[in-house]
Picture 1: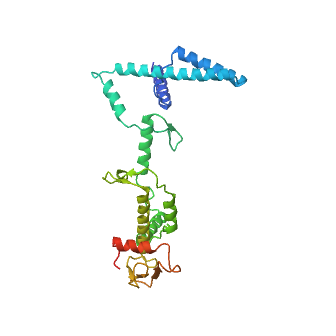
Picture 2: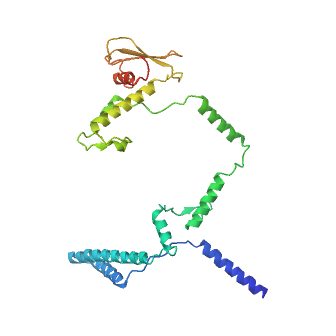
Length: 291
């Protein structure tokens, strides 16, 4: 009697273990009616005959049956949905469950694979796999006294905090801005300013977009030139050598080192693409520095 009880328990455990390992899929869709399945069979038979003969009449029959099948399936699904919604009742929880499912923005998570090679398909298995992954990631580091790892982290943090970081992004040039503005279509329909975060109801054209790009170029050039490339400080002063208008000679000078850079909008030899007359005009109008 005891052996029979153990055998029965072992069989039930194996069945439960097999059921847990089996992939869990959703409920299968309703079976199509016989007349729709008959039309699909006829369409496949005609398509097989058309692949051998290439008869245009058979091709027309295939197209006609395809349209009929699509219409019949659409009507069938619509009737099923109508019957389903008609059976919903506010006295039970069926109506509220369906409303909550329709109002929630559900996301479909693809099957997940664990480190052991098992695949999580059902929502419960995915949740357990994600929980195990987070538990592993946020658990304390078992190798707390790893000397080489600690030395590497300390040196990287010290280098980032105490040494200047070089930027490898080149400043935008006037030629690149000019090419971008020339590629814009001036006859394009204007857009609403609310697209760019403004509250006005006015419209903005591509000409204004081009001017905005010029302003962005001015900002980029100013910020790239107001830090000293030698000592990496912001103690950069702009001096105007001449008082005869905008097209004169200017000098950028560092207050801590011997950095000195001159440029002019009239002399081509001293005209630097990163710092030009529009940059000086932008600095004057926007008061980035005192002249």
